[in-house]
Length: 64
Image 1 (cartoon, helix red, strand yellow):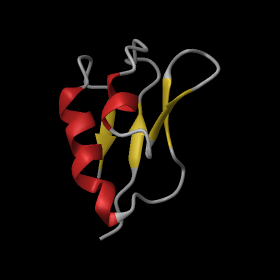
Image 2 (cartoon, rainbow, N blue to C red):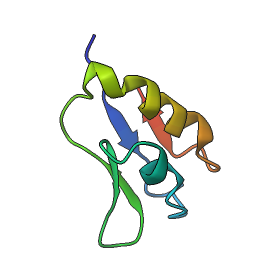
Image 3 (cartoon, rainbow, N blue to C red):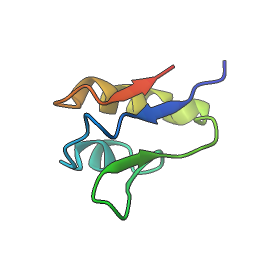
Image 4 (cartoon, rainbow, N blue to C red):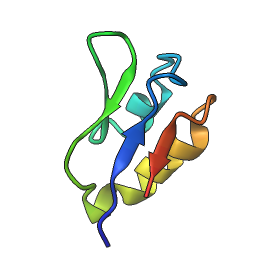
């Protein structure tokens, strides 16, 4: 299964919750908002990426 994460910059408030939950997939961009890695998510990281998606206060993250 190929899983990718996307951050909606319009919804992101830069709270850094996703980067603390799953730093392998999410990082903070120069604009102070979160960004996801371009490549597919490693199988071992899907669970924490999903946790980050569910924890996002503005629902800016999509993992699919």
